[in-house]
Image 1 (tube, rainbow, N blue to C red):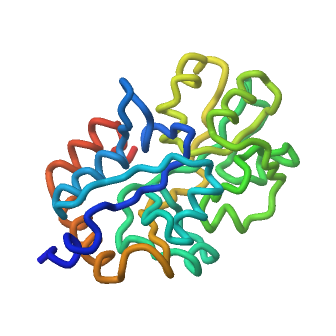
Image 2 (cartoon, rainbow, N blue to C red):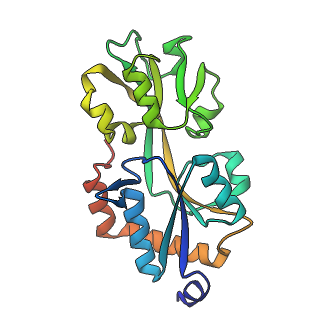
Length: 238
């Protein structure tokens, strides 16, 4: 069944940003791990292929996959613009709640809408998507830094009052957890965004190979191992 993949793509090149992004990917005891990394290893084992990880600045991650220097981005939200450039996995493999994180005490009466925070600038990661719904909403968004971790540092230093981030990354940030009394996660989430794997449309592995990957992902999600990883990384729906 997987002969084509084995003959032509024994190595799947995975482009990952050089800044750790727990729980998805991060270095622990000198080894790359995380929910997305472990998921990919299970899929690679199913397909009898090897993984090659490339750690790059975010802008180069996108460029490498788009131009065929790498085959796959493991954590990607779906937007109309990106759909023109990338081929997404047929299924998402996680749902990511997008929330606001505020300095404590938070001065807002939050009602689940961005309108309730008024004109207060919302600090975000530069060139980062928060899903098609939030990307298209007009609000006082200020792209200020290159990673969530830098956003968390700015918030804890009170250089900004309000940031937007993934609830999963907030809950898995050692920096935030060590100072959890200083911040408030505003609930409910602004949106819940599906997380996909993404391939280059014009370069990289073929459509047949992407289909084999999609079949392996579907099998993985139906199996016990998927549920075990959701539990391990505390990613079950709340």
